Length: 152
Image (cartoon, rainbow, N blue to C red; front, side, top):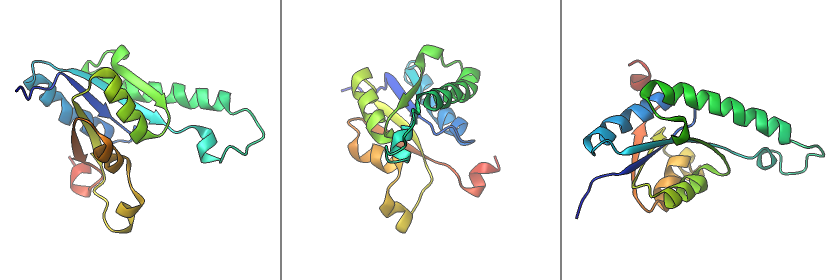
């Protein structure tokens, strides 16, 4: 039985910690015969944020958000040589879209940032928790957002 990873999905939120999450995946890919890396950001549909009760067409705003997310994702991925065809911006709920992408593209490792929430914040859930609980492959949660991490 082989434990080599062939396709790694890095899920990012496009904050300043996104590079840290990607940088944790890169050496894993190198150690696994240069495994393919895909990087993904998920935009929640504007209709979800406003309950779908807005009497206007949000398509152009959603398109602008999509374009901005693609530009930001490229800023994170391009310096590390991640080809544009492996950079994905999708619309939907983050944990569901990460699971869908992983299943459709044969991902065997998901790398996601985690803020290490506890107590009440943990009860409310997080993307990393949702990814972990529904994943059909290994998940690496990279601790982000702490003072000691942000000083590096």
